[in-house]
Image (cartoon, rainbow, N blue to C red; front, side):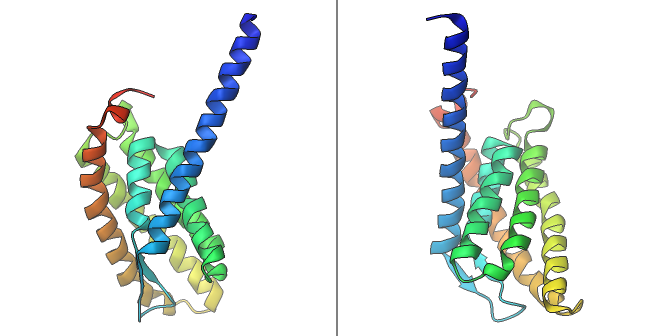
Length: 183
């Protein structure tokens, strides 16, 4: 086999594996959102779910691109298929940005999600962006700039729970053979 053909096959295999990994990570976020969620009695229909923990974990372990895609696809699909269709565009934007920010900070300066304090900072830094996108999206949907304030406490609880789960989970997973190798 010629060198060009081998290079093409290797590139196709890498792209296929990247696509499969992104699909698996998006599914993990989706399932974490679907199976453990509690509808809040306050705000405009917010939920407490474990999807945020999955998003933080994916972004820390796999970086900004996978974090953005898994968050947007996983939680966006939850909204689309879970009866929250009106929220899907806002969720896709909010969670793509959140996953990207977490991954970008956690992987900054070659850290690759290895620095626990940086990972905590990454998750915390993403929260105001997520809150702002949901606030603006909700204000536009309901044509009311005051009503979205009622959703902020639930969003903060969801992010806090996500952070409390994702950080120790990421630390534990980083110790596994899969993450010890540099992929």
